[in-house]
Image: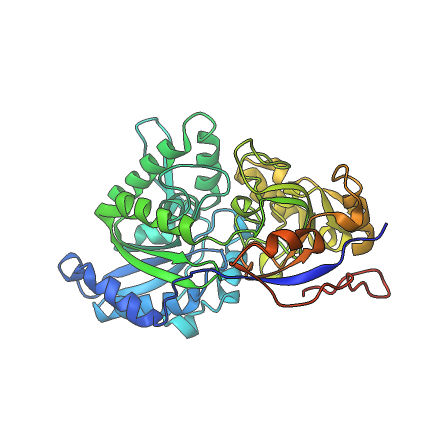
Length: 419
């Protein structure tokens, strides 16, 4: 079975990009007129999550400097639910791996899995919050706004999720995901979020929106009283600017790497068309991807293979890189155990691709619509099979930047780790 030849294609996005990060943070913090709400010497906890947010170290450093200019004493709190296996030291290592260190940012890191119950919602759902953050005089919530990988609503993934799942730590994250079984996602995220705002000294939010090239597009300072309205507005922009696959139908999607730094679901289900079902698109959901092959995990995910169950096939390398305990904890905390299911896996890329193409329907392998991507954040350049040529020639947003070539298998029948 001969796999199709592939050519390199560049996607052309109209992507706003924020060039001066420190200036943007300064402008947004100053616009909130916080002077009257704080007193010199007070402490402020800054949330730092586990996603691979563009410029995150510089953003945190800039926020620390602005809060210090107000006379406050900021410190950093890892805010990532159960990521890192629910271990404080591992969570601190994750943010330090992104460059968010005390030395660089100028603020100490206080990592703990201890929480305090600060109240309960009108539905009787207990609300838990990071102990260090709760003990602080103020809290600054930093989060990237983007579509959630599982739920749909006016508020999805962003500042509210950071307050619930991130600062709720393992205990809160597990509880809220269970509560969503009985109550709507929107009801839980609003009610718990409001309780946190009311009881935990939330001073401000810093909403981050990225463009299709995984670069910072917008930073928005948000007052505690306007979290709901601003997050709804920012989600509209995030959906408009999110990266997408270039085609609506794909026989085989080859994903070089997945990881928690790429998406909470390992690979963004909004991008691959698996938001509502693990292994196929919903009726009105696009793209329609028949089979997914995962080749490996990112280094930054530290063995967390959450979301690998979304793929039908995997390279043996991805399975060997998987830390089962960390992955299981994360998927069970998110009440999505199937996200840790092991796909069919084989020893080489050639075998993986051959086997996958045997199950894409009535299409010869050399004519299959195959798409290869680095990951679901990096979609500026992709490899596509020759079957897409007729469509590419009609599209102004796609540019062929490399001639069609056979897949470059090495002596071990593997492809290069990246392209």
